Length: 193
Image 1: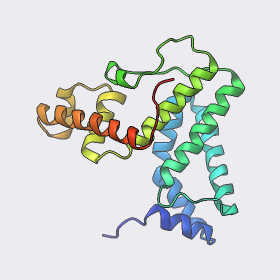
Image 2: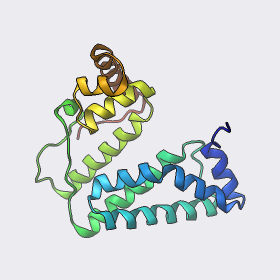
Image 3: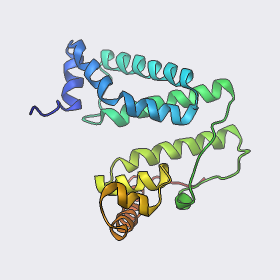
């Protein structure tokens, strides 16, 4: 079985004129990027537009030779999408709704629903930083954290879904939070305002 070609190689191929390489990259990541955009704007048409704009920007940047995120294609595209989402909210003066779960209190920054636009954008930026930081966790910890926080699953459900005991799931969650704090310190990210 052939191993999938690494993103960084596909990016390099595309820059050197291999149009098909971009198609592979888009197919590979479109589900995650689209889900991310949709989870913020909650409107299928708007999400489609932002998705298109994201890749127009990706193409322009790659064609200009301004891409330097060695091997970090997906987080880079996510940042572009995230900035376009913020632009969309600024233009429409609509504030996004945030779904959170109590487990995330260590990171919940602002809970007032009537946030002014600037604070809302700061919170959105923090949520986005957090998603990128979560990407740095080991897969088993990331899986439990995402199920618990973003999918709001119980540890019993996580245990059933991952095939590990509840104690193992709890342990992974604990380590995920410990590691997340370390990653936050490493990046000097301030999660309060």
